[in-house]
Length: 56
Image 1 (tube, rainbow, N blue to C red):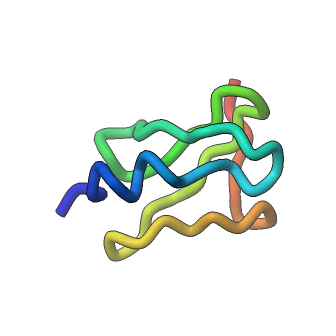
Image 2: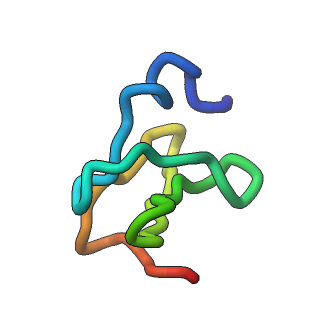
């Protein structure tokens, strides 16, 4: 099940407070500013800085 559009509108990177976008066929969220990627597990975004990966 994809992330609800209303939820996606309010989600922001906890590191730099920039809005995030869906990536990897809807299985992750990416911050365009600090390039952190937050996984989505069981339809729940894991917005923890320590668990994020950094991609260019």
